[in-house]
Image 1 (cartoon, rainbow over the protein chains, first blue to last red):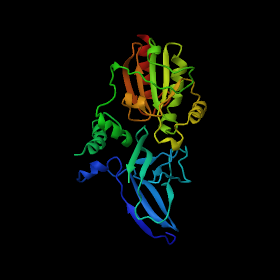
Image 2 (image 1 turned 120 degrees about the horizontal axis):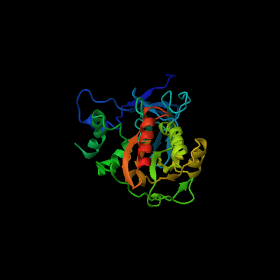
Image 3 (image 1 turned 135 degrees about the horizontal axis):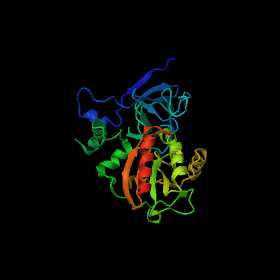
Image 4 (image 1 turned 30 degrees about the vertical axis):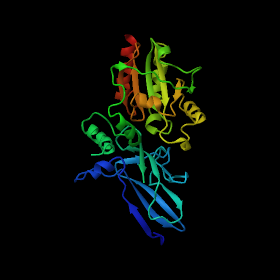
Length: 123
Length: 193
């Protein structure tokens, strides 16, 4: 991984987080997970969707930080209609962080669902 | 089980019941305050109060539209499912406006203002891009969205000439597909009453 050391891989259940907390096998897969890794003096944060959802690329996912700044996730690879990310989008967070805090927003679609829906998660 | 957990679990249960699609997390939190919020057909359509309109000389009110069939489309220009449905709505507007249909876009942003969805000029550009000539209201505070208990982009509410909600639905559809034909039949039914 270009000498970069993986710092953390946080599994984040999104809309089903609470449901998953209720426990039990067969719980739905988390809709997104957040991966962080060192990138020089920064931390690269990557938003990885579960297999059954797509991330809306027209409304770039955002991480709202406590200081009021907003990190926007992006990727150069989009689907042919440019509506969705074709690879997980990422953002560079200044400094080294083992854990990312803030409010994560993403617009997601299940692959078979003809609707958009907002995902908001306090990290 | 915490209330928030219940709100988040409900969509899964609803999907399992075949009643609803997936839930919006952000809206789920507001839905949790009113678990069954939203007008359900048939019932009187609530009056929206939006003040910023495009493709209209003045704010449109439900009261002023009395005697017309009204199709509300809750959408946002960043939603591909919404914009891919627009050609069908433009078609409905062109076919049925003269016969008594008023199509109204309720433009409700998904993200906070930094994403640009609240910007009137951005909405105006989207209307031009998609050849939308029917009125659109900016619903930047999501009050009309909440008033109607909407959960998904895009969603639809069809109101008859007496101001009664007769049909609701959500999800992308395309010119002449089955869902298009369903809405087309519903519109014609109400126009003929």
